[in-house]
Image (cartoon, rainbow, N blue to C red):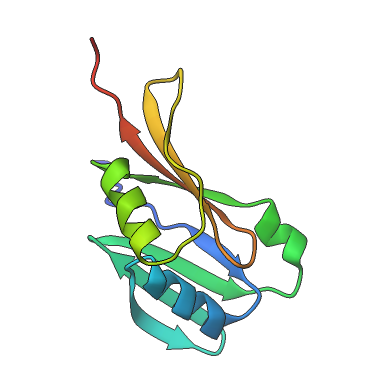
Length: 117
């Protein structure tokens, strides 16, 4: 019998754990664990983990894809929260995507499947 995969959890680089905690709260995530060397944030049942890293180029070359059922609503929420980002874009691969770059350079891609037809 095979084991079942139940979730994937990105582990992103953080140049400052406290700064990451504060920023992700701005995105509506709740901090569920904050230690000097590890951070876990959760929103709508989805987790992101962070590890301390002194090399900004690692974070700047990292991204995470987060599925959403309404990126326009996320866009409006983030605008109201003062998060700087561009509006969502419909992509030729059938996704509407919203990109947010955190203060350390991690790229968050929020994607919503575009209805066919």
